[in-house]
View 1 (tube, helix red, strand yellow):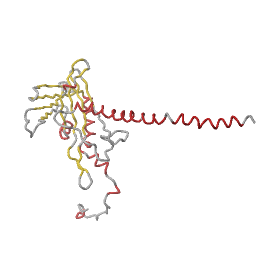
View 2 (cartoon, helix red, strand yellow):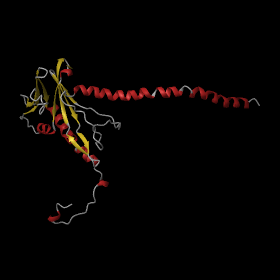
View 3 (tube, helix red, strand yellow):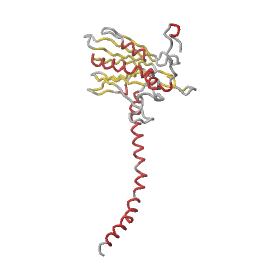
View 4 (cartoon, one colour):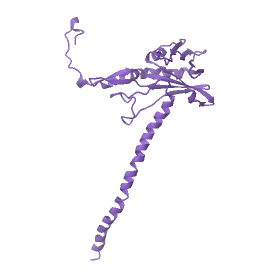
Length: 265
C-alpha cells in the first residue's frame, strides 16, 4: 500500500508545475521576436547605408529588383523578396583605390502584366585617393558609371590600345557643362597592365581632381571576365531567359522543307 501514494503524488506535481512554466513563457515569446525582427531589418540597413554614400551625387542608381526569374541577381541568397545584394571588385594601390560595383537594370510593368527594361544597368567605378598606407578617403571619392557599350569598348581593347570616355552628368539640364568627367584607360609603359585615370572638373563645388590607379594584367583579366559575365544581367537578358516557360510557349508545328516557309510562324 505505501507504493501507490508516491504514484499519486507524482501525477499531481506536473499540473502544479505547468502554470509555473507556462506563465513566464508568454512574456518571453512577446519580447524575443521584436529584437529578432529589428536585427533582420538592421542587417539590411547597414548594407544600404554602406552602399548609399558610395553612390553618385548626380543620379539615383537604386532600382527595384527584377520582377521574377532573375536567377538570384539583385536578391538576397536566403530568398527574401525585400533583400538586396551588393557586391564589388576592389583594387587597392599606393595612391588610390578603385572599386567596380554593378547596378541592376530598371523594369517597368506593362498593361499585359509583363515587364520591360526601362533602363539598362551599369557598372559604377569609384575612385578613392589614399591618405596613408592602406588607408583611403571614400568621402572624397569620384565616380564614373560605365554603360553597356562602354564596357564593350573596354573588352575589345588590344594590348596597346587605349580609350577615353566623356560624361556630363547634367547633360540636357540647366547645369549642363558645369561638371566634366573624363575616364582614360591606357596601357602601362611596360605593357603588363593598364592605367585607369579619372579626371573630374566640377565648377559647382570648385573641384578639379585627377585620380589614377595602375591595374595589373591579372587584375584586368578579372575585370574582363566579370564584365563578360555581367553584361546579360545589365541588359535584362538573363531575366528574360529565366522567365521563359516551355508550357506557356505556342505550339510548334514543323514547317515544310521549302524556302517559302522559312520565315512563317
